[in-house]
Length: 126
Ligand SMILES: [Zn+2]
Image (cartoon, rainbow, N blue to C red):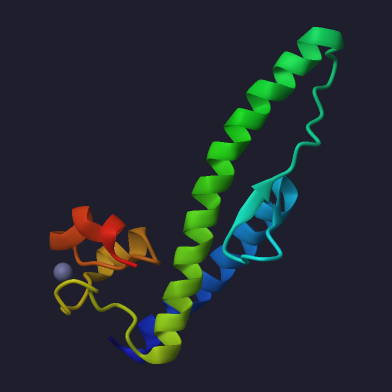
């Protein structure tokens, strides 16, 4: 990949990493024993609610938060791995076929680990 493109994606990844980290820090606490794991915080403000209504609202919000934190955590870890691949000089190479990942795919998902052909197998790639 051209150096200019790598620089562009690196900048995009660093920006995304910063934004996601801010969101994660808002909603969760980093597990001190496993830095890739985030534990959702429980301090949810159910504004205007009281008693049982407040409890129910907090439960719903907390369940949603667990899902959201899990998504953000995965994204955050993928971004960190992509940044590592930039350092290693292997960024933009499909981890399954070893072929170049299409630029439009990387534009849509900067942390992509596979080319379009192997898009469905990405979940299995570490
Ligand atoms: Zn591939």
